[in-house]
Image (cartoon, rainbow, N blue to C red; front, side):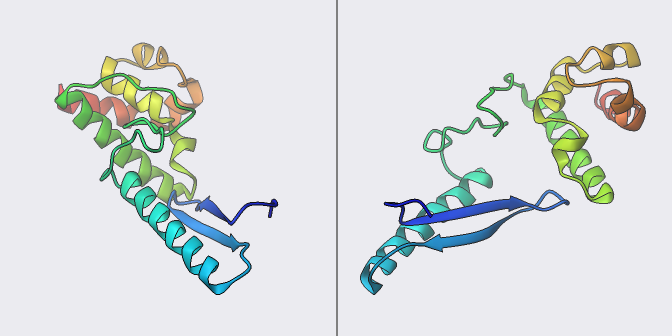
Length: 152
């Protein structure tokens, strides 16, 4: 642990997409300092859990409401398209769990948001979405196109 650091928390993501605390390292000299550091650590962890569950303001953590990746903002989605985006996220998670990979391996959040925004109905339109190639379309395209057709 680096000098002057009180604690480090390592977060890990399982193959099924769940996040967990991999380890906590605490560097203190007394029991009182330990209790103080742990109290702050628990408070911060609780806030992060609430953030990840969408229960606290994003600004404190600098995280976009839809995407937590690289600070890239995703487009504003109206209620119908937001519902479609949420359905895409659920489908992606279902696929990822079956394949035992992280959800972002299937499609990135920005791809799902773009699909919800543009609502392509053909293979050609689907392939125009940044981050989608022939292989991704072959593996997942038809099921996502079907979801779009059902909501249109």
